[in-house]
Length: 312
Image (cartoon, rainbow, N blue to C red; front, side, top):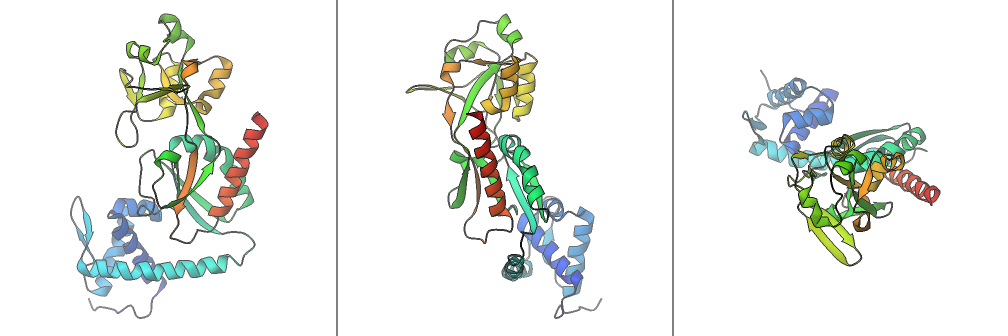
């Protein structure tokens, strides 16, 4: 098949170059396909077509890995510059509009998804109908830049350095909770160390470790390696298990306010409930802020402030 130089780029050429760029950055056809919103087979077809038109292999593929060839690495580096210029040019055009337009990709921890995004995103999409928002809920710490996200939501003490970090709300209270049924059948703990003789619902963090429960009363700070027969990886399931009487859960007070109000759950060791870092939205400071992100930050902060004011 004769090689056709890409001196005049067609729409198909640009789409295939963008497909290659996504695969090279994520080092995965599966991840790139999800990011681009197409099937893995369609993505593979695009990259293969590009290689055939250029007459050179761009990616080395095995059953487990994808890595650029020398030619592919060089092309990806040049494309990074070129696509950045195109993106910034489009951003300049969009800024001439009355409203932002585009697509925001957010990586959000589950607590942030439930306490912030679910509550306040509806207002944002109502105010800015030309901005599409894609949300990945993930408690793992990921590199939002290399994974193609515009911003992330994490607890302040876990936000990576060298990012612009915007605090969303105040510090958060953590509580240990259990159902009345569970507490009726066992002697309620009086001190954090008493939890060692209880059934605690362990939580495996996004970093793969089992979370140690923290307690504070005045200047007295204690960390407990809470024992338990059950270990989960999401707060929602831990809360449901606590409601069912399976054990004591440890979570943000805001996640269980409704159950505390109706008596379905009770706070264990209330005098020891610590207050920790707020949730922050963060994004890379070395890149131009994407369309709609500043507006999203304003809506989130305004909504959280309104909630705080009405609860006082």
